[in-house]
Image (cartoon, rainbow, N blue to C red; front, side, top):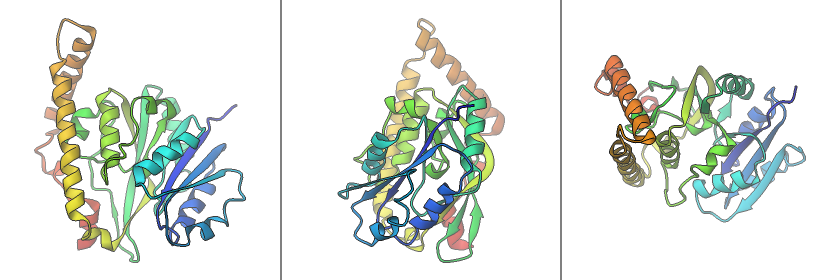
Length: 282
């Protein structure tokens, strides 16, 4: 049986203290074939010294670029990746054992899905504080739900390579590039599959709890505005007189019926604190 190749893209900036554990967590996965594409986004620490311990492995590809941000690093990695499926791993996050094999098996069984994502736990770097993801997750056509808030962490995502013909990462965004990317896929009707299992550990750094809040808030507002524009464009195409219009009408009805059933978005379970806030209080 020929197994699908999976490429894991790791963008790294000044991650010398953490990237070793990230790489170890991928290299010990029980799926083959796989390749790891590391993109050094202009690091000024000793990242390359650490990476020399791994570059002998034929599964590892490496490229260094000037510092142009995480979106550029990911897009650069995509150009080098050769797998049929793509995963992402932040340089300070960790894949749990069996993550790739279980997620790929689930994706190949659900052939209609283009994107898979899993549950995750979040840990505060340098402490023993850990919280489970507080988000409510959705499968299928998730556009109506993800336009309100991003509940998917990219270190849990696996997707088909051909989806990058629909969208790539916006290099003009300083952050929230993941939400923007997933919004564009969901707006296009790509189906998502949620794997209800913790298969990634996500690092939260203490400095993230208080730094760059202005940039993060401004960028979140920008992506939120894009979400509203996408939703407006979607609704404007609802019509009983065209194939696309009928498709959008069916999607809209399904969104509204399901949202009413679960009390979205007004139920308290949808109005929760981010993992970083929970860690700060724990």
